[in-house]
Length: 341
Image 1 (cartoon, rainbow, N blue to C red):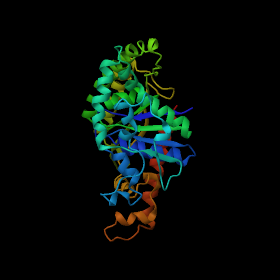
Image 2 (image 1 turned 120 degrees about the horizontal axis):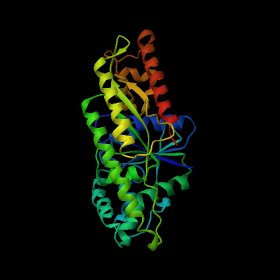
Image 3 (image 1 turned 90 degrees about the vertical axis):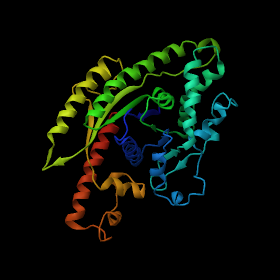
Image 4 (image 1 turned 30 degrees about the vertical axis):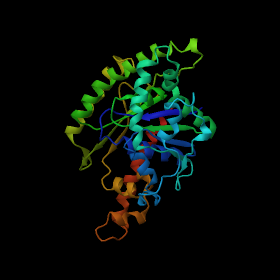
């Protein structure tokens, strides 16, 4: 059975795209068949996916595969009730064979209007809007069945808008990446209330579907866990200021995000320690991995030329710390994978 999981935080700059891409690669390298869905109109996951090819160096050429907006257009324009998975062409990674992409699209921002209208009108007798309301979930499920994916991983933008809402509600669960700072502390306080409203409204909308012979979807994503990252370590110790914010955030997650909001916690989630993974700042590893479209834990020695001031590959005592950091990062990503449904 396929699990649909979204990497989500309503605050930006917390490494959502980096984390979901690395999680997708880890699962793919572990023998799982994975679909990465770029639901963010900024298309950063798409750029990262294609960085291992020459496609992005040819600005006038069309990217391969069907974009997420192209896939959904038939429903948005009222031509069809649901999306035929055979009409959607996915792109297979040229370095990770078990990983495929439903690529992003700058024009997908226009889906805010379609999903927004459906959110407001699906509760009425408007069958057209009811079908638009369920189309995203239907599409992901049909692609999963047609292609035999074990996991569908979605990347979304840092918002509480209609696109993000449709994606999160279509998911079985979500992972919340965080940085140990005041801004993420505030984001956690807001997110519990937002998701609670989404779930309650979805329940009301779904009750109106049965007389029209339309199947809704669960619409109750679990909080699978949180990832605290981008903190710095000095002298083998985490700075005290990071620890303080981490503790404050953990408290808010346990109370306002879970207990008070009523968000269902995943089976691997712990109230006592909501952070399923702690990822320190990876320094130059991230930009080098991005240059080659590879996972941070899968950088090859030859790629270190891009980090070297001399343009030469790292060896010996300079290369060994990179190996250690990559192994550490892989271990933390494996912890995230362990709490997936």
